[in-house]
Image (tube, rainbow, N blue to C red; front, side, top):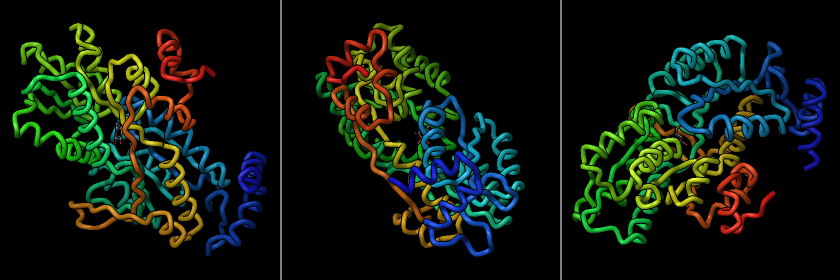
Amino acid sequence: MRRKTLALVAAGAGTVLALAACGNNSGGGAAGGSSNGASAGGGPKVGVILPDTKSSARWESFDKPLLQQAMQAAGVDADIQNAQGDPQKFATLADGMIQRGVKVLMIVNLSSEGGAAVEKKAQAAGIPTIDYDRLTLGGTADYYVSFDNVKVGHLQGQGLVDCLSAKNAPKGANIIEIEGSPTDNNATLFHQGQEQVLKPKYDSGDYKLVQSQPVDQWDNQKGGQLFEQILTSNGGKVDGVVAANDGLSLAVITVLQKNGLNGKVPVTGQDATVDGLKALLRGDQCVNVFKPIKQEAEAAAKIAIALAKGDRSAADQVAKASSHDPQGNRDVKSVLLDPIMIKKQDVKQVIDSGEVKASDVCSGDVAQLCQAAGIPAS
Ligand code: BGC
């Protein structure tokens, strides 16, 4: 605790103090001179590129501040940028960070191709890379920090089954799947996990898969339009919807509302965003998957900090799991955290974790629903 405070104060007060504080704690810096403060050129030590601001509220509302906090607490200067969904911008940001001599580059790729190109350049410049949240297939990242993404999908599938049986859904229930981006390996893993639960139901005829629809770049608006088209061509019949994240779920719910079906048709989600939690409390979304991003950001920051100091064995201590990249045919040292299924009664758990504020969720019509769910107003 004391160490944290010291480093924080020092980071605020200036690089020299931060260097002194961290150098003392770590018992010496990396070979090659520079210790735990700024990079050789005096710029930020860790470069982070987040993917966009629209596919999920998580990147700007959770990941950015939590990564910033975790790096700051260790007295490491980080440059956290957002590619705004633009592959060109993603590449340009990475080039700039590599040129400025960051010690570590952490990326959330927009596609495996784009991510792999950046990682190759970083590798040529001797800069280690971390895949944050999304594995870059065919890439060269030294580490991968994420959740067990097949389990995320499994929980979505299981949640949907629970919700459908609670509603006594008819045999042959019509299911529409609105999936993530085909360019995102996570979307593939989420779908794999969902299939573990849903495929046997489709095979037995308990459920009928109307359509499984990937959504390019997780574009929420497009997801809503695609859902509407599928619903219309199925004669307005739907009993349950797999929506791969909260952004897509909210787009689906808007269409259901137009058709007077919200609250009647269970919809899944992911990310436990403020709007997702509100939809859960209102009964418009039936199940969400909470991924404690604080844990993800802290693990990634720990690895980045160790790598910035040139301490690979400390980084290995954090990344004890391993993930297979079928494209590159290699195993990547990983941190794979545990996702948590949440329903209406569990929203309190997310708020208690401190990641989402009650004041953000419990406003307007949701205030009363929060009270009923035992969430204290604060
Ligand atoms: C992340 C999800 C996110 C989605 C869209 C995935 O790779 O794991 O948390 O909702 O991308 O940004």
